[in-house]
Length: 223
Length: 233
Image (cartoon, rainbow over the protein chains, first blue to last red):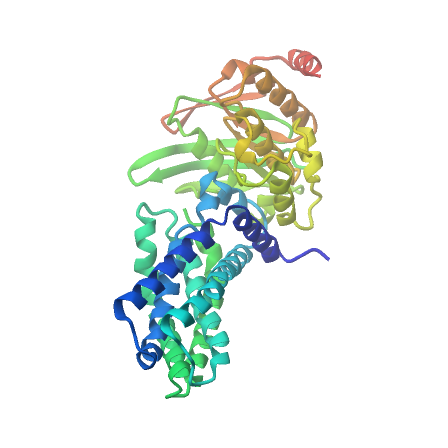
């Protein structure tokens, strides 16, 4: 059986990143810098850490991911590879899905490296169910990536695309960011039940993934 | 099989108030080579990109026909067209065979060439592991042509295929194009090297400021073309 189209795109993106490591290196450096700087600037106590750590972690991931998402389509633009892809009969949705999963994998790698650093610098110990973070963070990351890949594609034909992406992406990401921060804080402090926020994140992911896949063909073939 | 493979009906392409193409009409037949000439900015690349479906005409219609002579669906039409631009349209980080393997996978259910066959047909060694970004300009052009050939397209749209090529590589490419024509594929190519491509041309289409100035028969007779093809082999 031949692999699904999106797997071809995914495999290609993973192999390209494996060779260059451009996205992962830039994201990792940026995210580590944010985490270290915030810990130095606030020198938080353990109690204060629990309250602010969720927000800092989410914002560090968000800015790091945006820096990589700006380059998400750079390789396709460089030699007009995107035109070659447009000429194939493969559906645009598969290209979108492959690219989104690849970028999700890159950000996840950064998060895995970042997590122990974060725990050490902020002296963190979750009071709530820490395992729920393994659900919240991927859900929030997917929300960011799926929109980021879509809007990066939307802005590739504009002159100031590097500035335009955060301007479009961040307002749309606000509900997911809120859900992610609130869920993380609830888990770390144990003061509230994060279930509602997790459900909201899941619903957000389903809605925006579906919309992205439905509309990507139009974006891909737009002039 | 219908004699026509594509038809442009009074197409115009506007960018704001600038007209890149003005009411261009032409019918393309199977197994013919069309040479598109014109100065810079005449609309040659826009014409090819419109034919390829990468640009939508502002006015007029582009039709790609299937074997029965009916206008093909856009999805079906895409598989019948191969487009080569000035750029390689390949990933610099991958070798030729890696690039082609990826693109072959995207033409599912079609009778494609293998990446190795496509590379050999343009005179490149499939065992070459060097990334495309490190190829010479001539090798890049050939690798780009190999990508186009993967899906065995019936309509080949080649934008400046000889640019940055030395004369020997250009003649090699011409010989290759000649074999495609004898396989009844239609070739539309743009070039500034008129004398190089003329022996191949059945029709010469001249554009100026987006308008079609003339559509003349190629200057070489059939006998001369056969001589050229023989010499090429």
